[in-house]
Length: 212
Length: 239
Image 1 (cartoon, chains in turn red, purple):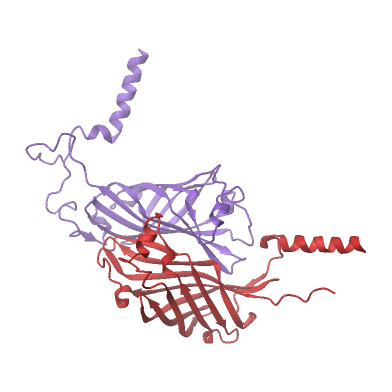
Image 2: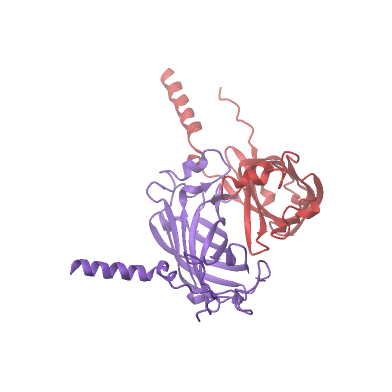
């Protein structure tokens, strides 16, 4: 009996230690109706938020990534347009191609993150425009001011796996930084900022009852 | 005889490089009306045909190469950047078929927002950068598709395997600046199947189709005066 228990424990240990790749593939689809409503957390390890801004009077696009992003999704599977999203960004975590430029951008002359340590988006309205696509409007708080912004959002995929329910999106929107009072180097550096986000939200499954 | 042959070869090599060109100083044609005339920021154009043909160099702080890879069987896209690139563009705006891009990416410069993940991805389990430290792209053909757009095909070498890939390219703008006679900006988007390059780690959970997006700025540097100063009387531009 002891040997059987030991093998079961060992098997359990192996299964839980195995990387996610080794688990059976979760069912992936694009139909909201097949998902579960509820509160999902933004998976901060599966988010890619970039800002694109015109460089050199609009000759090219400079692209910066914000590393630290968090948030929640209150997801309504039956009526996705009734869902609500909140995303919080730490602008101090801005990354450029060279390691010294990110901290320079976070500093007083540019993003002044000491004074404005948080940027936030809180959705106010969503409208479906096509299957899996919609326009998401909300309040963007940036550089200490709040103004509306609208994103084009696409539902990339949903999955229901052994550990969690997942929903992924791609969103793109733009705003004028001068509207928020952020005017450093306007002209040589663009006023319009394009925000693009790839993101996954996760709702962990309730842990299974322990075997007797 | 061998020594003579060697010197002739060396001389030939020198002649082929731009180094020797500086000995005979050729003033660029900055006559009014030419695209190289004018002050900083007075020339700006969304029309690529107004920019001069020539050799341009990628400006590394103004290069952004991002890749998107499907995650979790296709639930979302994971985003990665390669921070270090270098390259040259032989630009022939009025005949794009003659334009050539030559790019080298330092694959080790992969950046992600997840702690310790970049280290894993450039390691032996994934991109094997100890064996394949760089990826390169060399244009094989290019064609204009609109006033500011084109399709550029070239050989991408990744993890030691070379395959063709086609990019949709958009010309963003051109201008003059303090450092450059001309700056050119582009955005290029292309897709590859990473398995074509033998990069098969975690296929399934992590997608095969990878989207590459490159936002770049290239510069034709201002010529430096010859060593010893510019000629006393302004030389007529050599046509």
